[in-house]
Image (cartoon, rainbow over all chains, first blue to last red; front, side):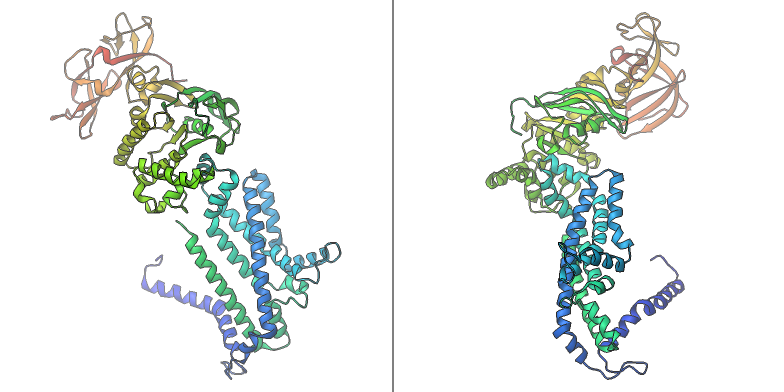
Length: 265
Length: 354
């Protein structure tokens, strides 16, 4: 413990409570409260019900949840593959070229996601690359947006990787591809799963670029939440938000289980 | 790997430079088949660079590296067929001991039955057979190093590169592993070993020949006895075994040290020349005797089995390692030291200081 005196420790906890509760915990609690209510006119929500959840887990809502899950999983896997590939390739380059690659991959994060959405819309609206109106443009947008994070966390892990392992493997007669599959990637596995979790969570919550691109038959859950609250259906929207939150947390929990088993040190 | 006719390592004026900084300066050295060659030197002397040039992790700017009669200078590391063991073991943390040892064999697509057989053999040889199912993190440092050696031996290399393999172990374990390495070499008499170390005891114990390196250059190369008994220059004398290096003037049939006539074999050095007299501290005795030097004690260090006396004689400090003294002299006492003429070696001055 950094703070030793009892009084100071209480003060630290008090500051934490004042900052954390209103900023982070309270909004989530409000959503949680609203999701199972029919009215909220007093201090607390009233008219408890499960009807909101019932409608949030069937029909269009269920469709949207699967859409979100499929989009997020596909986008994260694609981003992980591309980001890892680029990070591994960049690791073999000279420092100057590595910086250029790093800068290129940060670009989608530096640019507002609305701009990314718009640029994809413009780029893929004409044959032969006509993706507009299909689910693929949504998946592509999510991939572009989250690849930056995959690339960044994997390339950070690669620089921390002790070259002694690769060299030991090479001296034992392993070709570079064999070293990659049997030594480097297994050693990077904890970072890869962490990156996958991050990408998944970001993709599940993506709204601004999705709004510009989604076709009617591929509506992710955040869009549904937005339109519900937009037309004033706050309680139904809250229930959808809780479903989105729960689904994301469950997947992240599963990923972290995989990661714990993959960390060897 | 498969050539099998003549192994051994040959450096043919190999130079390595990083960004114009020469870290290995035209090294010429041959390690015979089955020979243990120690590369001995302080850090930054280029010894590890020489080893990495054999392994293929650094590319020489000039010169060639041969394994047997194969020129491997342009071959990537995985096609050289060498075994390597490094200071930090570099065992693959995600693989069990047996899979670590099998790694090189599987990378070469060795048939399964043979992999099993050779892994068992390598683990047996290093005394690690009981630990095959463990992960590296469950082993002690010494055990990890044994596994690393087993892993390198499993591919039956003709050349084994050992890069400070014992430096990460504590002193007691180190002397045990040193004996173990000696035994392994007797069991594998055809394997040439290049052993990089900064520890002269390891080099003297294990090596058939020692190559002394300093500041990117090879200083001396010879059998441990040659280098120890008759070092060619001051650096070798002080690095292999520790030495008193005393400035002297050569006379007829002896030398003059701080006004005292000392009888030694002057060899071919001309009378009147300046030279350095090399005397090992443990060959210096206390009390009356031949070649007597009188001086004042400046330091007494008790090292358990021995006492080290530092005695100032005519402005120079002479060190003497003596069997534990019952009644050691005190600081500032006047004492006599002596040494036998045949225990001193005369070195031409300036050699090895470049």
